[in-house]
Image (cartoon, rainbow, N blue to C red):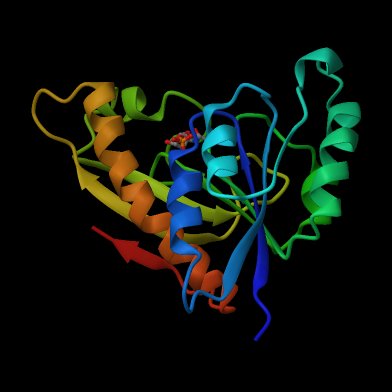
Length: 198
Ligand code: GAR
């Protein structure tokens, strides 16, 4: 059996990326082919390289908001790696419809809320402000609409008395590290029925 090739896009420390890398061993149907960042200083790049995974970075800043030009550069290492599946894992740049359509049906994202609630930023603070009893994270297929697309899995956590955005974020992140590998494995096996955790 030939393994599915997985590219992972990050912007920061890459804890979800590491959870994905650590899962792709043994009888897992996929293997990592690239970790790519829009920030050459992203801590996750060194952590991936230390595990022997090819890494690349394309700094978005010199492009000064010219998304098409940035994405043209980002595509070079990404297409050279010939991924079957692209995982966004804490990748904090919004991608254009053109870019997304190249990977239609094979690009995943993890978002720290129970979508369709709280697309965009500051999801933990917004869940607390709304007085929600539960919060969580979602893995979904990426479409041209931000934080939209078919849901492939969700994990729920209770909101506790006295929770702060930071405390809640930490508990959600633990669940992200369970959920994303579970969804990726199933997705690589061709399964799209949603995973429900928590
Ligand atoms: C994660 O909580 C992820 O869900 C979130 O950023 C964090 C990245 O952490 N992603 C988004 O907010 C995407 N809009 P990590 O770098 O340690 O995986």
